[in-house]
Amino acid sequence: MTDTAIESGLGAPPTTSAGRDVARSGEPGTTPPPGAGGHGPPPVPSFNIVPVRALPVVAVILVGLVVAIASNNLWALTFFHVAGGGLWTSLDLFLGLILGPIMGSLTIPARIEFTTKFMPKMLLIMPTLVAMTLGAGFQLARHMGNLEASYPHHGWVVASYIVVGCMAVIALGLLEPANLAVLFELKKPRPNGARIQRLMKVFIYTAGITGLLQILTILIMTFLASR
Amino acid sequence: MSTTAEVPPPGFSEPDAEDLRQADFPPVMPIAISTLVLIVAGGIVVAAQYGRPPKLTIPVVLLSVAAVLLLVNAVLVVRIQEFARPVFHRVLGWALLAYVVIAGILEYVFLYDHTPGRELALFSAMLLLFALDVPLMLSYSVARWQAPDAR
Image 1 (cartoon, each protein chain N blue to C red):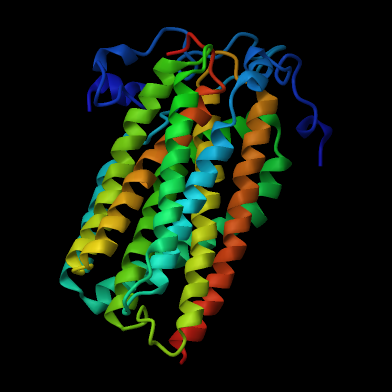
Image 2 (cartoon, rainbow over the protein chains, first blue to last red; image 1 turned 120 degrees about the vertical axis):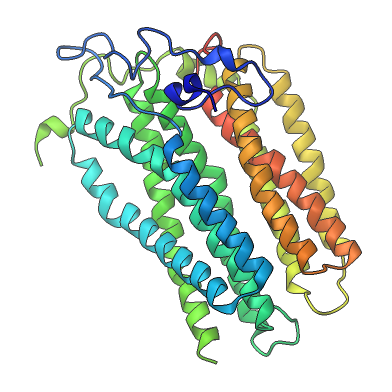
């Protein structure tokens, strides 16, 4: 990735000219928007939409996941599944039930500052945790024979598929688009505060809902593990 | 709770041109989410039959409807007149890259597990639709709130 792409946070796609994304003077993130400090929109701190420096960490985790699947190592598969699932659940519940209400009580400049620091990280953390949990979980279940239709508690396994399917639709269809839209809105010269609030509400509520669905998954998984 | 947290600064939350243009946009997001629901449902039906000869009629129907919806959605997006296409294409490119990697990992798992031919073909088609539908959702949901000339 070029320095220019790193500077603007999300560079040109692989199919287009990389030179298109030169950070423009006056772009939010480089200078405060008009009215900062007085009337008008509050200042938006500089931020990258994709935290490029964290990408190697994501790559290492994904390579580790592929190695765990390829080696069919029971410990590695259990580690990726349990660690990913635990972090995914905790993060969703923390977001929906703890952080959401706190954010609602912050001043608008504080909310903006928090959002610009927090949301780019979530853009990498959540898909990585989902890939860890589901990829390792499917292989682990296959390894242990839990996927077989002849498995005595197959109905519970199918129930967990349905819950995970619901979570995937909510996360990919509502949560991630809201996350990305907020970040691009904050990159505008004059971000629309009402729109950011609406999108952040979608993000926080859907995170809370997927957190609750995660508890359902944990109930099913612990039931299956104890049989 | 202080009142300063409730009152937005003047000019910060007024409807702008992008808000006003939303009514002109086709229902891309509901169609894309429906596509995703069909793909996920098809995947669940196939996975639920793991270990016995699968009945693939329902998953094939779900997959076909999902493919038609995705195609309709692509046409709807192409036909939007006032749209931030540079932003749309930029996000689409990166999102495609990310979701091709994710779909690639899943495809690798299916190949590694020696998934039988017909199921593998079905799963591969589902992954392809998944890797196209999610980036479409992400790029549209960003571009819809940008000015048409935004880069």
